[in-house]
Image (cartoon, rainbow, N blue to C red; front, side, top):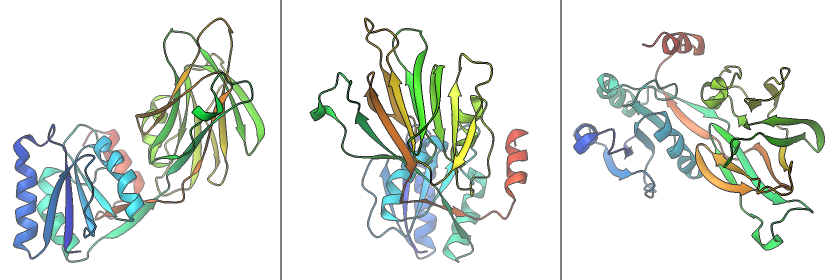
Length: 282
């Protein structure tokens, strides 16, 4: 790789000090580098992307990069980063290794979701969402407004699974297993695996556990209205970004996305070694 793009987070890299240093080093070694901020268009010439910030910045960048089939690597400038392999003190060596071709590219599955309106939904058919959204980490359906439980009907491949009375539900990838899903009691999964995790959030049921499903499954989550006189609704968030609102009768169907996130890996450490280090805080 010789042509790079740096996606920088100005809140983490004050005055772009590190960004400028990386750009200069890449150009000094005969490469090219363009700098953009989050949300800006990724240059078509980029062969690889450095993402400065933290796991959140990397996750947001992955959704865009996956559509262009460009691999990326994260530089952790935040707190605990499970996804960002690099720290400030390893950047110079990393740039040299990547430009020499001493790396591997690890593919991570993503999720795709599409909303629909049920036959009894108060939404008009013209309000129905027609496009899809993708997530590297998770899709979270959670209550909003009054501090009351919602009832979410979950089906897998058209077959009824369960109705959860909870604050919400998390549909996560193996990459997202160390995020919100883990906080809600879900298992930690090797990010290279292909499976989908379904984890309820604060379920009002002692037997409600996280469920691991096949990567080829289609999971449908529908909002069941509990009290017709109340204006019940839930938010649907893809990787922490609000995507839509579900009213009683509405649903969202989630499955593995066609595109995959490509992560540049330099370390030969096993998943267990990396996990142990992160859990011990170093």
